[in-house]
Length: 195
View 1: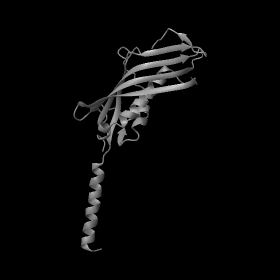
View 2: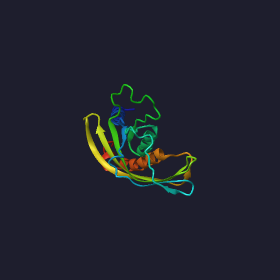
View 3: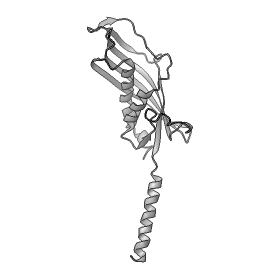
View 4: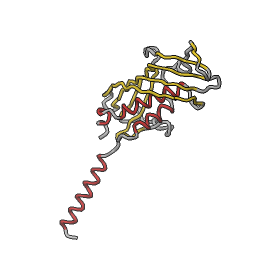
């Protein structure tokens, strides 16, 4: 190999190394989900029994604490972001993902859910069908700049047309969040943060 070829090979190898060093993935983590039922202006109905007879009682079980971040939201967010170039820090898979990371992630995402429509039917045996439509306000926080760089609201819907024994109102809410999260993941300003 002549000197010119050898020098060219080293330059290409070096350029390749620099390109790999610059291509470090941009990480994102779902930090918090807040359920706001007080300001949602929720409409709809709750019915009971296999014939879905009207009921005038509606109770938000398990949401006295409005911060509802949990595994169900984490993995739904990770799935929604899967088609992007972000590296998602998914605490539902790595239980120690944020330990010692001072907030962990180049970007953090917070979400406020406003369930706008809730139409469900519950059986005495615990089965559920119906639909939930929510508006979800997403806030994208740049951990380096220490500021919110994008705030946007997307609507999401989840519907179970047949009775399910493996679901509840919380799952319907989480699925409506997942639908909105897909739209957030496709938001051009969000996508541009992970080139």
